Picture 1 (tube, rainbow, N blue to C red):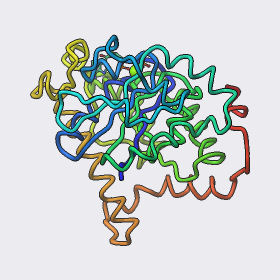
Picture 2 (picture 1 turned 135 degrees about the horizontal axis):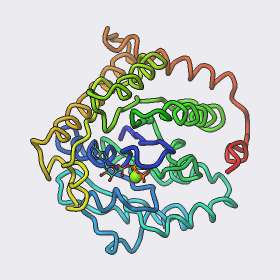
Picture 3 (picture 1 turned 60 degrees about the vertical axis):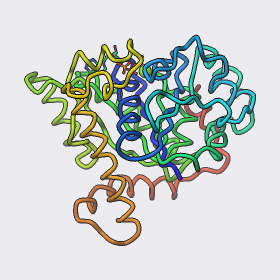
Length: 298
Ligand SMILES: Nc1ncnc2c1ncn2[C@@H]1O[C@H](COP(=O)(O)OP(=O)(O)OP(=O)(O)O)[C@@H](O)[C@H]1O
Ligand SMILES: [Mg+2]
């Protein structure tokens, strides 16, 4: 059964889509069958994975709004093992239409119930907002991956996102974990980049991925060719960085499984601490029938 990751940050342009598409491609190449879900009306992950937006007549919108089975709209990419649940601009309408639906926060989770069996990994790319679409992603997710750019306001945005993740834990999904924080467009020569990295590490010592993603022009060119970096330029620094990051993600997951099954691995032993604390807190605070979207003023 697939492990489901959402790539989230309400801040625009921090590298969510680049991260979602390239991790998905490396997972498909090196780890197992992968489904990339584009939950952003911009449809950037769809086109970056090689599915032209004008060829998407039925999208994730129909899955959420009209209960069309997710499996029926999955598109295969040219990349072996990588499938896409595509998006287009009609998804923007889902925000409005879902508001009056019962269990509106669980639409995606319900929709993924059947397809989850068909994949080893599911990666969800989310829009740059803490909207009902993002809440749907979080409610359907095992682990959240948070890409951040090393700039001055990164920490401010991060605390807002963590608050939302906590609200989702408390109200909807106590098992939700933070998979990790990924530094994107990182330049080790810049003092500010290093300062932000150190500050985030200090606050969240076990959550920051060791592998950072450098700024690399090949990563920004690849989407216009409809190719993940692995196919566009596999030897670029951007490609090597995403390959290592994906390997780190897989090994964290394997270690966590081993940890949960009782065969404790020293590397993993300290990592879940932050998540365990969050989970315990979420479980004891759990509020029945709370209206999360209301709480978030969506
Ligand atoms: N490591 C990188 N090096 C160079 N350019 C990058 C890198 N990561 C992302 N970019 C470029 O930065 C821009 C924003 O990236 P991306 O679309 O992945 O961000 P996003 O968080 O998904 O944006 P949005 O919030 O609009 O969905 C894109 O033009 C992308 O090609
Ligand atoms: Mg995006």
